[in-house]
Image (tube, rainbow, N blue to C red; front, side, top):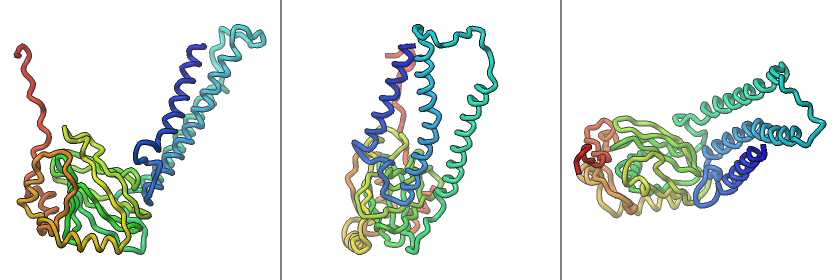
Length: 297
């Protein structure tokens, strides 16, 4: 019993340390800076509270049981032939059932409220953005502004963002932890996501799906700026840099790692639609290492 109690104690300490370190060392889903991310945080904390409602009493009961039925306690009743108790069975089954019902309710409500396809309620018109995951970089197209950016995303603060996403290679996952929900991208398919940065700031974006050798460096920066600063960035981008035409896009299809941020002053018409429709061939994708057959050297 002493070893069992010690093991439980170590797990509790590890859990506390993990929670304490959640906000350290980088962006965290528990440090939201957007409407969707704030709702995600509420769901996580509510789910944690519901699960702790059974975990904490279980740990306390286990430790109390071990202490009460220790060898030196003469007051404990020893019943070696005890088999069944209806009251205990009622408690054992009712608590997990309630936990499942509460968690199911939270998940059901959250899945409706945080549907990636559901627009964010706002008086402001959403900013349209098209995102393409490549090997190993992110390409963002601003269709209304006719500009594009590589491995960087500049957006106005306090304005809804409507993403249309696809992949030019293998499956990937778009994720900005401090702004909200993660969503997968697939070649030949398009999906949607609505996010919003509630205030100005710089946020870390990343790939959350392993996609080959360059996966660790497949990151991007999101800068939420004032509306005036966003307009200035668009004007500045439109005046410098190359054009993102089909030739330049095919160059981006080549596998590369840790590409520096870049911008494009213009974008070819229907480029994103051509990628989704596979009118532009997809990238090669990560190739597996060639291994010798058994017996070969």
